[in-house]
Image (cartoon, rainbow, N blue to C red; front, side):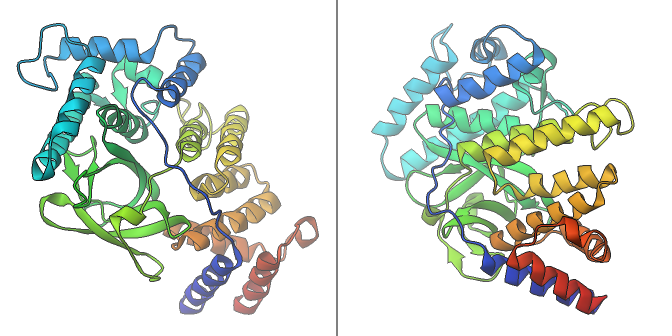
Length: 373
């Protein structure tokens, strides 16, 4: 067991050093009512065969909710108008007062989403269409909406992946949260509608830092403010201002990832109770789309290997796990599930070598696998 663990850690270190991270990054602009927000929503509506605009639905929900952004607002004031007024108020505010108003806006956004979309659904809640038709939400969608509302109010907000919850439970990037950057420079706030309180303290996040996507350990100060983060690979500290949120490509990729993970009859057997041949093909289609949009989406890369393994396409599954391992290693952490997949790939190392195209890093894996069997 210790020798296998040592091999996995050594492999991940060597694979990580073999990869060059892309140099440029732009965090997603998800402003409510903006072109990116509207396109994401329209894509979901089109897949569901649903007519209309999501912003029209949410505007109507705001008017019905009885939860105005500002107490005493004029009757019939639209959501967009309320956010634009708050933007002007934030611009006029100074110092601590501006931070307090930013936090107040985040608290309202958290309460508003939970009220107008009361149900949580892992299976379909990631679709804008499900939110509008069934009142169902999920971590990715609720985070996009919250970030969009905050951005429309003129605040700096975005998304990060979560790999360690506020209870300390680790996952394979199993959650998404929105993050607000306080305008005064004090740090960041996680605004997570999956939690009962407006601000969360998820200890492990994946965000852009030091030239690539990195697994980070967040450090919190008073008021749940993230004051700094340390890289999970032990290679230094990250200031909040040196951390950037997920790109638009990554956000798009996550929507398609969930479409693959939750495809009817797909990998998880959603809606059928078991995987079917047609469903697995759907999972493959969406996961490949996710990787086309964001090749650095390590979660999508690993889960595509799971689909092929379920189809007994073991040679392809093994090669895909190795590609995913390169991504995780470069980003600084290998989750337990990925480590288990690597162990399986090691056991398969003697099968079908001639069918694989080996990079130098993968040749190294084959040598290490042979040495530790």
